[in-house]
Length: 401
Image (cartoon, rainbow, N blue to C red; front, side, top):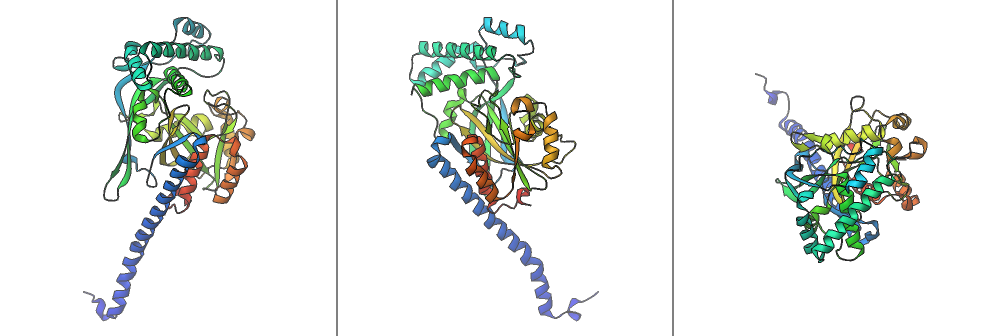
């Protein structure tokens, strides 16, 4: 048997062993330092939004550290539903012009509120807003008619009443020895019409100063009947991480008051995103990229990370930031795909030369774009980019590969 001591001096063996041990140890220490710096930067931005950006209408709720591991971001579906029916006369007029308008097919057996338990909703609103139950009933009926008429007025635009998920509760936890971020979101079943009605009820009570916007995650869970939507908000890197892409959203969308630079992709979680009885963010991202930008998962390798959960205060909507990288696609190729995307004419302006923009993936270029376009960016876009900039400080993930 070969004796290394016959070939090497003891000190040589020691240096050799140290050479094997030190690099991975040093790399681990470096990774922990970088992770700590990134988390501190995220917390600083978080506080900045909470204290200095009230006009931005954003409430950060919780963050990954610096991203959520797949098993640590859980979105489950409760056996609960919340649906409202349109006034019958308006609903009939809509179906005459657009028979495919309503594709909601819930069982409606376990409604906690809705048509089978409107009294429960009126009682909740009475207690929550300090109004009479009769006033709550009148408010809900007025909002139902208003939203139904809005749908009727815009019947020729490409929208329909589809199934959606609302939020019953969000829990923020720390797990494991490293206290990794973990979020547990419980969802109920709803639909787009109910979402718009409850948004209008919320906005009305807010404008009348009967209620205030939530100011923390623990407080948010009390607003669960208003939380009828949860969306995936994606920033996309392309061309081997060289460019960040933003898309412009249209006035045609109900929650957009004007053409502004938005996210790369924004999609509400729906029934098509179910995997193993849970809502899959990966499936939502893949579907959204395909429907809004024309990117096929069969043709391109898609890498994604999930970073933050936040609230748009008015209208009251919860979003999850996603950071996606697709190396094997250039901006010119993306513009060509965008022309053929299912939702491009609806979600954006339909014209890739005006509806998409690329920004060099560098702190300097991104910051300059935000400064030059701060009045023409949605709050969601500003927030997601700020969270991205926080992670660029010392991020060792695929984003900075």
